[in-house]
Length: 83
Image 1 (cartoon, rainbow, N blue to C red):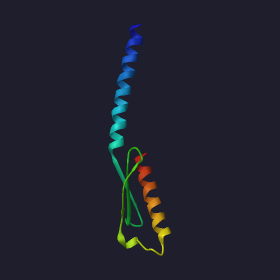
Image 2 (tube, one colour):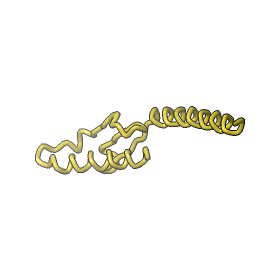
Image 3 (cartoon, rainbow, N blue to C red):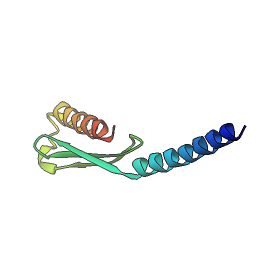
Image 4 (cartoon, rainbow, N blue to C red):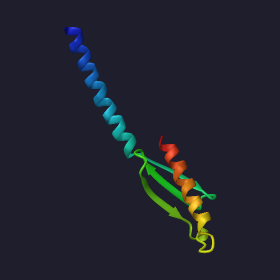
């Protein structure tokens, strides 16, 4: 039974370490850009969008779809980096 108790203690320590690592990763920020840096997206380790920065030069009311594509590209790349 001593071995089982030791294994349970080791498992508990591993769970605690894993929880700390997950918390640390969730607090990190991952940034990516698209359009030559005109759109920047930042996500955290939980894959939540933290911020989006858009250079006013890229804002063209006649071409909203291009801006949408740049935002999607930047967010996807930042999310990929968070993985």
